[in-house]
Length: 145
Length: 140
Image (tube, rainbow over all chains, first blue to last red; front, side, top):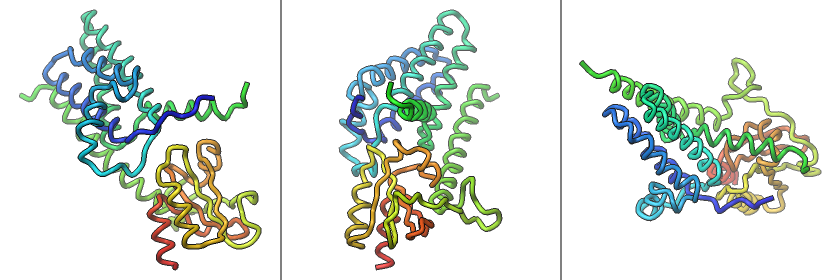
């Protein structure tokens, strides 16, 4: 069984979610479908390679965090990474929809990501994270094969 | 004429703010023990289940601290209890390994601490390390 990775400051993913929400909503209002592939790429870097490689997460760690008091609690990085991966999938699908000329579908998918990311940024409730934790709990509770 | 898109975005922002307010209120209720499946109707009190015997001390009170592997303040709770009540019976339960037990006591965050008497009846429940410290300070 792999040991859990080093815990992270949960405010990094929160900033990531806030930037994502703002960027996607701005793109929606200004009718700039390019935000879908652009933020898909941003999320992908963090989800695939870890918090040091996500642009917003890196910015938080290097610029914002040193100016703040230490966090009250740390969190497992895996649930937000999973949630970001789900976001990448939706935004990639949105990009394909835009490329295929199905703009309403593209925006619908984009808005789903914006809504969930915005909910997470505003309340700390990360739906993707909860899905990961639910699945992880079920898998761990099952007896070892 | 305001474009439809702007209206949608404004509605979303409003919903985020609303969700934030409702969630904060819900968390305050949970911390105060006012919410849950086993709430006694009308009194707002929460009837917590009896603590299993294998977690209890043979006599006297027991402190049960629900933790997670990444909880930074969980050790602080143990040491504050040990400092204020040396020799008291303190057990930690990893909420990720005991999800049913954690659910039974409404554990949504770590540390969540349950204080029980020798028969397993819950005397108090604290969410967070500060709540435990405050209780210990007041009853010192």
